[in-house]
Length: 497
Picture 1: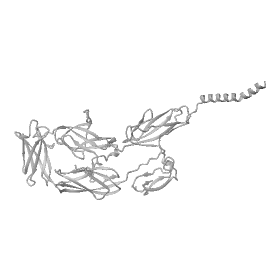
Picture 2 (picture 1 turned 90 degrees about the vertical axis):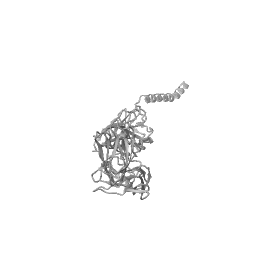
Picture 3 (picture 1 turned 120 degrees about the horizontal axis):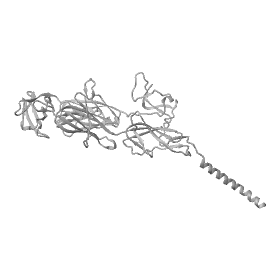
Picture 4 (picture 1 turned 30 degrees about the horizontal axis):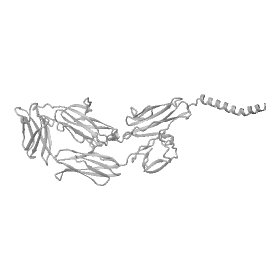
């Protein structure tokens, strides 16, 4: 009996441990730990995700942690709301990988399946490269011409217009890439000519193509748009058009009095049917172009006696008379930043001639535009200091790289046969530092800085001015400012209340 009692005493602790273990195991199975929160873990400390569309490779994955970690229901959903734009610039795949569709900002929110706890981040998408171009076309009266989408393979837009003068403009996307190098080319420059600024002249009827392109595209691609141009012939009494017109005035450079004129003759007529008359014509050549009734006429003149040129077709009574105007060669210089046609400072229409501004490290293409064309002209480009570096592209354009902050003057001269011709153009370029944009993750009023506007190197009327930069004491916690957490430190950022 004694031995049985001793054995029972020894078994009691073992039985107690088995009971406790069994009860605990049962509790761990049946207890439901509720969700108490959710947190996005794949973010930086200021709650912002900044992405460059130009080099994004799909390597960001949104991950969220349902709290506590022991919670049974760890499910959550992702929603995206655009900020100051119509469509959200990003979306997410089922595994949380971020997909970029466009530049812009969005608020990304994760919501727990249980009890709908939320956490959010701001995703800001920019692009350091060009994504696309949008050309537009205007007539001589600045009225927009329709560019309709084209169904032709390799062609983006098409338009139908009469012979005459037009101008292209282009909008870049994103808009901060307006400094991109843009080229305009025509498949048939005799039929439709287009210069560095997109100024176009339709001189022959039929169809040709104009391409606007930029080498500054995303992923180092060349971005281009092709416009199909259908040109209607202008009706004239003589059946002849000269440079796309019935009559008019041709401006000839007086120091090298020669001119090229593009003629379209009546259907079925050729260069052999053409008669050219006029006093002061010292030489003339006629060359057939893409069709027998399309010709290029090269002429030289005696500026003292030449006043007009008359073109007629043998056997027809009517003629086309063109007046001659002799003028000195002149040109101007603009940058490809001026992609839109605006009012000049004097209120007249034209490409703006304002002084130029360039960001340090940026490259901008500058172009010459001539009032009177002159064959054999090259351009000599110089700067008065080393704040910029100039690369002459050899076609009336130059690429200028901004090296350091300050002001420089570029001087451009037109040269022909080793001698300067026409005017000298001087343009001031101000090189500025890049602009830094700061976003606050919380309401600024919470920290006593509500209504403060920060603008680089700008002083507003009635505003304060500080030649310093505002910086928080702990740069790793933008969300944890307080009224004493500000110190002043160079370089510059200016505030106005």
